[in-house]
Image (cartoon, rainbow, N blue to C red; front, top):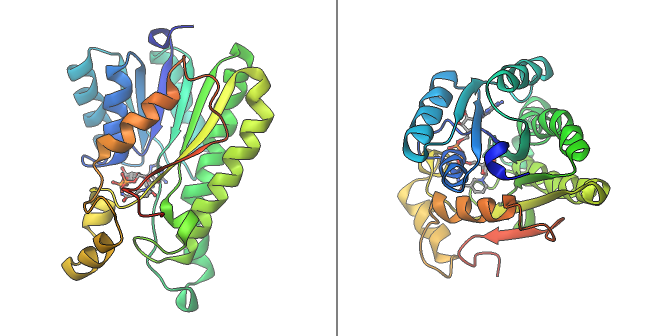
Length: 252
Ligand code: NAD
């Protein structure tokens, strides 16, 4: 089925400078209809409008808290009414946490896992069966270089652990649904220029982090979005269970 007859769902695509919004633009430019699901309803609608205007694709911006199963169910019902069936899911909604391990509370640990891991489960669990029935699907997880190296941008153990959990989730799911035409891959960005990094870094910390990046600069959201769009192509049918580093070489 051509992607113009399917919808790509991007969670957490409202943030104006975020990876999700850039991904929504790139997917729409390559022919997908696009649904942006985000806690921030106004931002999701604004993003959908912007993406639709620029690409000519059909889009929808829908309120959704990925941590809440009822909210996910309601968002997908709303999506079903306005856009074609879902052929791709980008699990992009994520939060970080800078709290050092010796200070982290159970509640903070759970909060980070609720969005990054349980949130990804809530929506993937609802969308993958339909993909498998149709014999075609693309799922991409936004992990992080923090999953591989530990620490990373904010140094939070909860964040690194949650992003590493996503890698296991993606690989096991890839094994299970591969025979039914669904690929599942992960991208692991390094320091990307978005609100998540702009809000939490002072100039000295940013300089120190960039010293460990062979490319000598932050990544652009477009760098990540283009790779995700490649992984979602109909033709990219023999890549699954893979993790792609997009970090300017900082994993070396
Ligand atoms: P961002 O903070 O700019 O955007 C995150 C979006 O997720 C926001 O629009 C927010 O409203 C939404 N969101 C948060 N909780 C949600 C929930 N419960 N339900 C639905 N939506 C929710 O983030 P970003 O920097 O664009 O990062 C996107 C993804 O990439 C995240 O998973 C992040 O962990 C990962 N990542 C980012 C970087 C980086 O340097 N920016 C590096 C590695 C990995």
